[in-house]
Length: 464
Image (cartoon, helix red, strand yellow):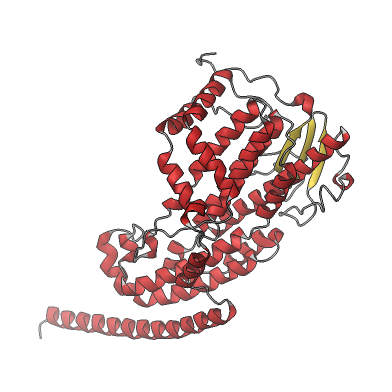
């Protein structure tokens, strides 16, 4: 036999043996993973009944209110009916600088931009009135259009709910600037109530939208308190803020995300091209190779993802000041599989967002209690313990530490704050974005004589 034929024969034999070994190993790995996966899912059925995605959706559907009382469906209609002038205003208002001062909330917007905001509010009066009515409703929810591949789930109905929140923010700022304090508070309360339209949507993206809408409500309320001295609705708003702060948004998100990821892996067993078709699978030329190389790996990764998401959920159900450290501990010694890396959410980023909004909601609730005390006594409380229980039953905890929120009286007002991501007391040096070292998270209220401070000058190039 010629040498090249011997080489070809030996090479072919080696390839056949290698493939045979791989197929046997892959079969064994898949069989073992399938058995352990089914055991894990049965365990979850017993420990957390109704945890699967179809079960979560079925339970949600039973709680949906009628369409004419469904905040989500009504918010989607408002989005569709909002005049184009509103989006055009939002674009103009941010050029060349934001129309609302970003830190000194007691400064009114520049006159030209405030006039533009008033005009836009008039054009949008119908959809603003409809958005205000959402503040009287208590439930919502809807399903995205049905798709076989969970990766292709359309969550536009959740994102669309942000438009009524933006409309109500515009309404609150204009009313507060025009000294309609009570009307502005009503708009802030309606904005906060919009979080109910997200309700228990089973994705972390939905929870981030809920966090964003709550943040809009908090900032609108801070500006209202920086421009005016509202009275009507403050006690009720304070209660609503504390209720939203205690909503288990992180646990809802992780429970839903666990179900969504499990359903995604189940789909990938049927259609291995699911990642490719959703834009997550890399070049098409690698798809066939990927199906061969990772057939058994999908099951192994599904088991790992299910375990990790369950750990996340258990952490989210515990004290908030332990979230970050425990989340970091979960992944510290994990070697994530390729599919887990693609599908597992950036848990720590979501946790930090949840901590920020929990802190700001609680701080604003305490700030309103301080404002109620000031209106009754003509001065700020010397410390939070001085506030009567009838106004503030208990000082809420700083979600970063578990200790009571911090309070400082300043020459021009007060600051209520939590310590932020660095877990250090920086004296109430507040940020309204992601806190950096040296920054705290909270709210600031001005004494009446410092409210409605001199309007900031017009940016150069703007008409007066």
